[in-house]
Length: 360
Image (cartoon, rainbow, N blue to C red):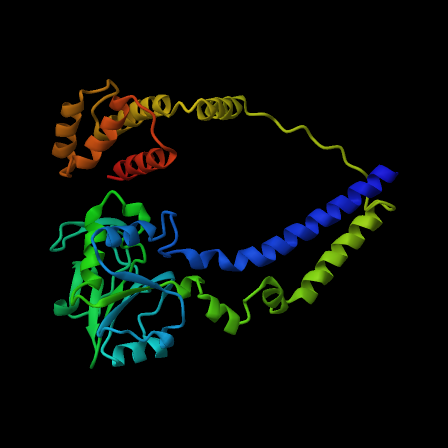
């Protein structure tokens, strides 16, 4: 009896901790998308590092936009949105332009067109990879920087003082395009057109300077929790605790025997094998096996049979049948031939390229 009561208390405490952590952490997850601090695929950490390597002076801004007073004018502010917003300017953005500054906004809402999701858009710096069907159709031809027959992906709108550029995709130069430098170069050309002083807005991603946190009441944990609906949280935790205590004395119904789940031997074997390979760091074996199967599946899709073809033969037939550049296919075919370990990130990137090839 003592053991069951102890388990009830432990369970109640565990549930309370989970509720509190979920309450605190969940609302702030999405806002980090597009941040230059993020190393995730949808972050901009790699592009920020690229700009620094190019010798470009670039600063992270972690205060409200109305507090941004530049020493050198004009200046350019880059805003990478964590959600698709309307292509209308906010009051602080209009004030920023009225001062003669420029603004680049990545991630504005527009209609979904009939174009392919993955496209290569021509630019003065080479082909830029775009992953969206959204196109803006109201821009003048002279204002389009990147687009096709379905509409514009990147366009500009010149105001009385400053200029603003919009993009239908927030992932124009995200970390996922680290192997596609044309995307990085293209965004760099957008923000460096006049040699302006350059800022990246991190305030919209939740990053704030210490003085701003103090003013907004986020200087310490107690101030932050004081702004949250703690009463509702405590009531919910209390109800859960009472239910657990009461359930030790009374049943809610007749006990039901649990059915033993049917084990999928094939799935269990695959998971066990995957665990062994991961612990053994045998990524080269995984690349070899998966690469061979991916090549056979690609050959079947092209109508080339199930006998593995020579490297150059497959490249030539790929170009002939699809009319596409063989560079990406050449890259994924070469990786298994190296017979060396690859990092988890490189492995994921390699698998992603195979997935793109299968959509030809």
